[in-house]
Image 1: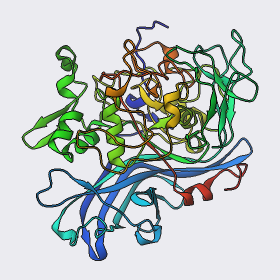
Image 2: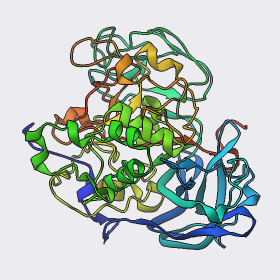
Image 3: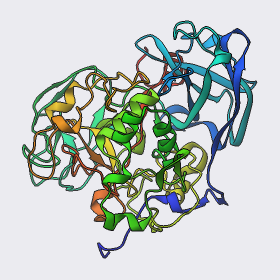
Length: 497
């Protein structure tokens, strides 16, 4: 295949399990305060699901969900604040057929996951959802005296269970089992717990096929801490990359100084703005996106980290990336996120407006449906060959300080994330050529690159990152699943909690 051919995941392919869909949408309407300090609203989205299936002698259940969080603004405030929700699931009121789990950050209710309580798929509407706001904890005496804003992001539940990293073949830059020898085929390594994990070139350990100094290096030997998210535990992953409408909404709720720091457009080179790939613009009415469902490119690590902090999410790790793509299946040689070595030809999403796919998981579509839709085992879209995915690196020691700590809904006055353990802001990175070793990196490969870069196990640029913004840089967030979801949906073959 000619390397100049451009490939992306099926953000531009509408065929899915034998059907055709219009652009997927999630909408929140009729937001208002209710009695007892409750925030009430309606929410609907077009491609919801919950399903169960058997794979590799284990039963799996997964679903999509809305991660819902609330912002408020008092009269005279320059920016919006994050509402503290009750940490008790029972204090919130989902409609019939829905379930709510609270997501906590250091014992504070940051938001909730709303999802189906029974199996089903298709468009799903929930009217009269009520969330208990601990408004007095936020020093708000009367919720009818403040502006309210409810945000919702589509997420996919990735159940607890073992999985493999690395794939068969001789891919340069791949995770491998530590007994691997240079020149031999990669030996996939199975992650079986969240416990401390030894990284070393010896049997039974996690290692990689690149030594120190490479962009996909495994140059750090030692014990990867138990606190570092390894992907075994259940977590939620954004179904799509953060889109331009969501990013514009984020900018609109910051202070002027924060928004100025996080607004990409002024720094995009003039000769690159003509392609129209980034449509967020500042107007007299605030920030708007003329293509709100288009994936948000031209974002730096600082932009991505600030958004995830503000939304109560966190970056994913390299290990979580492979789990989100592959599921519990054994690796396929040269596989892409849709589970095969078959490429999907599509349009260049940054220039052409196309419908979003309806990404149902293997449990609904089977393997063939995954390939047609270009989605991962669990039903996550655009993880090979769309925009570069930002991940926390295993291959560089700076990433090892990362923990499961999620954002607290607030960023620093200057517009930076301030979560302990996350890879630091670009201004702190060492200047070593075009890329810096900072604890973060890229996975997934962009639309324009060599097909090798799009493979699930390819780790090119996984251990280094540019400080700048680029048309191929995007991001999505994750969050560990609340305890109730973990305990009731893990595969039976997994260890008891």
